[in-house]
Image 1 (spheres, rainbow, N blue to C red):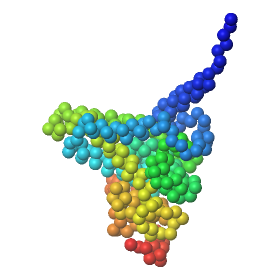
Image 2: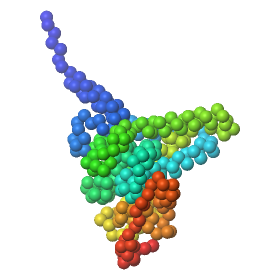
Image 3: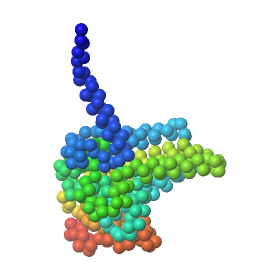
Image 4: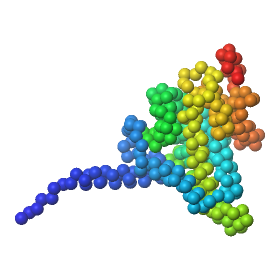
Length: 331
């Protein structure tokens, strides 16, 4: 008697899950890998891709390592210092250079800035610039992927970055950048710099533990504070501009969106909180348009210009100040 095995519907489901797992594993290493194609991915609905987000989840879970490692003054100082240095990497480099080209640099300087920006663990420079340019084109309308008015606070703050539709880079939006193969490489393999940075933090911790035991810091403690906690705080500080800077604060200019100026967010993000200013005139290297609007990123850009690494910082045209005065919103 011949027994005919009935095909199981679980087999194709299992195969599909396995393919999804393999695709996610490859995408962790190669951000440009999209089996369905980048355009098809961008047509996906707003839905969290949990497999692809595992590294992002691990970043947050790693913060709880503090329960095992404890803390030290040295670890806290390193965490704060790396937050400051890498917040500038986001605001002064990814944002004001790669997204808006508000100053100039050499090709070698550009590559150095891209490496620096990569330590912030916020994907590659072209991906970041693409999404930000798209945001300015569609700020607070239905096409804005992180508008709190369209998608709600939590999606604009953290949810949008977990969606499959927002993983690919639209290289047509950043044609001025994609002509540099070294930038495309860093963008495609955007985990290389963060991994090297994490290893460097751990190595410094080992060195301090061995040669300066009086500091009371260990390699694992420094990794938790200097990488996991510092990076997570950095991410949420940056994300506050996508979410809170379109909800709280004052509006100096009548822009087509709901961008706002916030002193508190400007302190947290080294000057990015003057968001209404920025949306009125994004082509300038400064976002604090007046002397009393603290813009640490701009001050640091002036320092870099003094060293010769960058030059031709773009200012605010007088017409913008005239507009602010006419609207009676110069304060």
